[in-house]
Length: 222
Image (cartoon, rainbow, N blue to C red; front, side, top):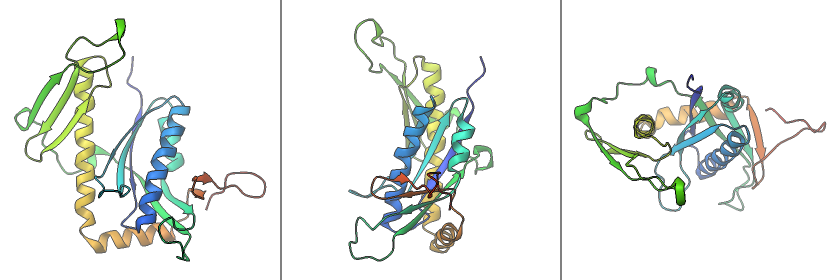
């Protein structure tokens, strides 16, 4: 059996204001709902937000036979029309985030040699009774040079969990790269200006992040 197609997407506020980070959180929930409705697997690693804050970025993986269709429907600029949930008297109501494809082979090299990794196995939890996992199939991998840690208990086999954990390590590395770039304010400011000028691929509105429709009842685009 061939492996299911998968796509990696970076969801980012582009250093936009707090409202844009809220849009990232809304988009992640919406993407997960759409993925599950289509029978796709959804995983997201988020940048570590400050206490009480929404994440500024996240790396999403969607897997399954319709992964490309879902990813393509999100790729580009996303517009959220909503009064600020944080600044009641703020006049601005249009907020923008970006969703971009990530190709791991195009990223800076990430050392995954055995000597740079510490792999631990453990008994993963699960449903009771005859389906209780009684083997050490859970895997936790620590990347020693960076201190990044990824864990997987999603799969039944230790081999598959090890691969999932390695993939998550790569995703965490991408997010760290993104956070490092955020220190370059000129790069992030330029990205946010590009998002604001871009033609949105999808438009959402209101606190419930409902997809906007036109007068004909069709989904609005831009």
